[in-house]
Length: 263
Picture 1 (spheres, rainbow, N blue to C red):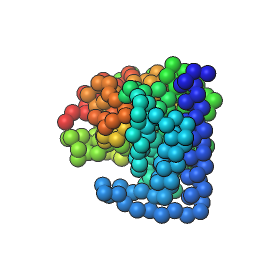
Picture 2: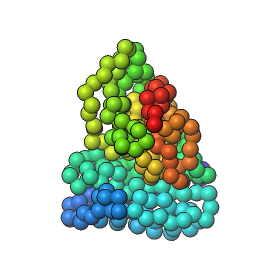
Picture 3: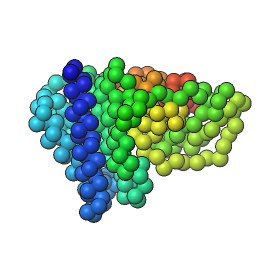
């Protein structure tokens, strides 16, 4: 197998084991705390993040880990990017959309991405040049363009008060001519939303933060499903460092989303 194929196997095994650890922690009981930015953190977040660092160091000591709760610096060009529980708020509330997200980034480019839903058992996987899959089903993005067909765009990962972004105004189901809908904020975490774009259920998602761990795996999943992922201005960017937001789409609505997302 190629290096990326072996890396994908490793990421899949880690995601499956991480999902099992999360299910066990949730069943046994967990503690909830708050970080400096007032976001939630649980024992599941911390346990999986530190466990994954140990797994990577055992396998490839020169690989780094960029995690939401803890990191390990890289000696080489490869960094594993993990969000141990994307959707901690949903995890706490028992809403089954929280996910484990693992990506391998080489020279800033995501080449392997895996996202596992501990509640449903679904696992999304992709490697550069190998396509994207949900379990054993090959994925493809939608063909809705928002003009001849309604487009479904989520913005749950965006913050209206930052950079002039009004995320709610972008949560439209539109046709031509555009029809404005009442503002609605969907309670979907970023990784869940990105997987929905990769599988063709949704057409776009907007991410307004700077943390790469939320979007690194989504990037390769959506690209391998035929979609497009850029920063908020339509440019490519690194995913082993802070990002300038993220626009995730089927490609057909991408430019329109960028045009609407103005500071």
